[in-house]
Length: 372
Ligand SMILES: Cc1cc2nc3c(=O)[nH]c(=O)nc-3n(C[C@H](O)[C@H](O)[C@H](O)COP(=O)(O)OP(=O)(O)OC[C@H]3O[C@@H](n4cnc5c(N)ncnc54)[C@H](O)[C@@H]3O)c2cc1C
Image (cartoon, rainbow, N blue to C red; front, side):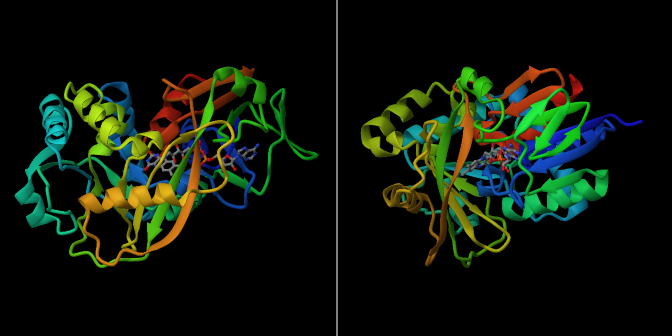
């Protein structure tokens, strides 16, 4: 007889865990409190983003997840774009970081340095004014998380027979059993992948871990006309200072110092700006980072304004009109890239992936399940 498992949460961490379990021949049930996935996993940019991960274990983890994504994308026809990420430099300090990163990593990552002229010839939506150079990383994949999460759920059901129970909150776990109201379900292994909900299950354990929340503000435009379909995810200096992968560059210190001196309001709101085109030619734009266990439910127009102002320095989208704004909340433990914890026998919490869940979950879940 097959071993059985229950996964709580149908965000990307829950789905990746369910997949890894099914690959190990478990019979899997997934419980999700909402009628469909509405958490961080549908509120993000949809970037599978190895470029943000530091070299070593995390980068390898991102590449393995990417491999799994591409395999599923191919089988399930999820929309995607393999156009990579283009990081743009408009100051000498930004160019120094890009060049240093390229020197340090060109043997192990798929990177190409471009001059300002080469960029202007190839990508008309990049602002040529003041542009110094750009670095294209070719491993990044864009999906549209709103479509991808639904299709992924259907795929897991059809391909592995994973059963989904939507609209069912699990409010108690004990002795290999979970409770949805009066209904009880049993399994050999239970996985809690509850994202930013630390309150319903194991709240004491979450409190002791030092985990907190981070609110990110986002926007999406109406469809726009672009001159080509090969637009990579676009970003500039602020993004370099955000991701751990660039932290080893000695030239980073000068860049960070300049941002603190010249753009304190961006530093204060944790703003770095990316512009990502989806299959409907809409541009997803963000974001900011505001930490605390009780994120402000109200979005601030001033933050979105700062994001758009910065984006206009490196893009040239004609007649860009914002159609939607929203926020997403991610769990985060300072200095940790994940929170894996067993609060009782047969129960594992998988959480705390911060801003890297779409990039890391598939491989992380495989790693965790291998130890069970
Ligand atoms: C604005 C934004 C942009 C981002 N951009 C990127 C990006 O481009 N690339 C990237 O790699 N990462 C990105 N991230 C991070 C990524 O989205 C998250 O790391 C990831 O989605 C977290 O997944 P999760 O499954 O832990 O959480 P969630 O997606 O929030 O899923 C948790 C689920 O658990 C359910 N749940 C909780 N408690 C219970 C319960 N008791 N019973 C039943 N169900 C329960 C919830 O309803 C929820 O659906 C971004 C995040 C945000 C917010």
